[in-house]
Length: 357
Image (cartoon, rainbow, N blue to C red; front, side):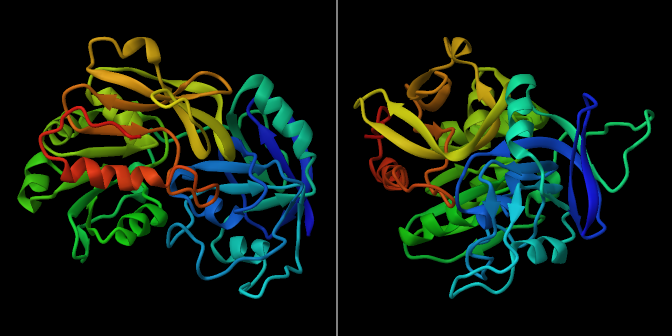
């Protein structure tokens, strides 16, 4: 390994060991999870980003053929304090660092991640570059408007099942959302993010799930009207980016968080029951609670760390959404019951006020 650097757009430089000869730039974010690094780096929601792992040693149990959330890695880079090169697990097929190299993802290790994360918490996420040499002062920090077109399926994909037919609108879906629906017997048709309302109607679904995905939900404003029409006609469940898109489609607003929520230990409170659940989260934007008035949307879950919106339901339509990941992977499965609630939402026809319990 040779020396490498993470250079932030504010001029800060963090030195480490560059694994391989690859370089990349992207939005630098941090994840607080202690395990689940394979699921994290394979989550399409990290498209365009460089992940800093807070946990000091990553790669202890290697990687395997079961836990990836997508077929390809869409993130732009990884920064760690230490990477284990000799993993120990009976399912391991290789090391974490080799897995990144095989997917052409640059990795910087031996970094003071404690100091780096403290800077990101104080000043917010910012663009950065993993490089073997320090850039000159003329380096241009470029960013794409949306990575959703890069991660969404390009054509319809169907998975048969004996239960209700669910259309999964793909903005960068995780495999675990699909398998969660399949475990309930659902037939699932995955559709590209730009699918029209008429194309969904032609499928005659029993319900629709709006998936997670990367980036700013406002960048998908061309889809808002379609989402509104779909959610007014079919029982609809939004997850993460899908939650934000539903809110925007019904008139609410979103805004960027200082450093986002990325980890597997975020406490959220269910307002109707008072129960608190530990959740897995990965997002950089929030629904603005003050803009929910006159949208027909009501708050169902709230984040106990910072009070941000974590769940919504509609007063008149069968619409439910959550900011966190009920399918977890990586993370706790405390809220997996929400998929069962969605199935109940589908079967309880005519009950427009059904809410998750």
